[in-house]
Image (cartoon, rainbow, N blue to C red; front, side, top):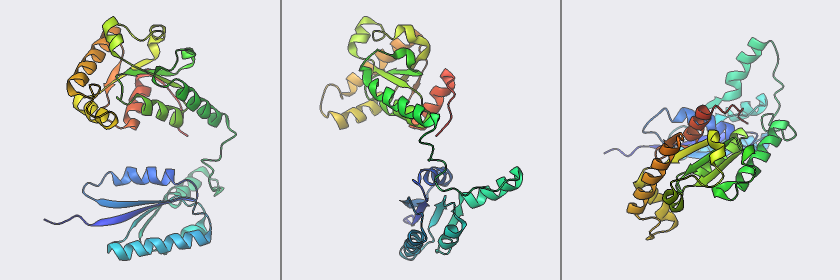
Length: 276
């Protein structure tokens, strides 16, 4: 049986590297069976740093016996030219897309480094920071004050993905997301947590497969009733029964990424915000 060969993928940027990594991952996921060692190289914004990066890329080519794949969002043409000399498949997002856009728009790009992430004084940036603070202050049912400001309120059993989804919605889209756990007391009362009923139009539920929930809870509290499979089955069944009774839209988070969950929530509740 042949062992899959590992090659290195570099994500090179003159900024944080988030854009290069996100776009690179989107392309790489289209190829099954490829084993990649991934390296992010942010703030590569001087000729000296780019030369060091190029040397590291060429070294990886020698060690792997295969050319690395380089995803770059470097803006400066001169820096791109240096990096292109490395022994690698070099994919420059700016070189690929800027020239056609310049031709179509009849304008020259400013070639400004970090333009995408430099809007710290913009209203959208301030809205995002406000949304993050709101979401942190309304995590796990901390308070029901200010729920009228929420864009969405997530409900579901403990550890089904409410907190990471709430934070993603806040950080990525500037949405104020509160979340509440559904607990045994709610199931006994057959009612939502206090204060949520009047915000029904903002509610969205998450559920999860019991075996997946058990695995997650076991990492947190092993050998506990909280993590026992039978208890997980009971809580999930009761939560789904309650959400069904209250007419709350919900989805199973077991095999979905946070990005998929968040996109579904935004479509279902018709939330429209721009990415940052």
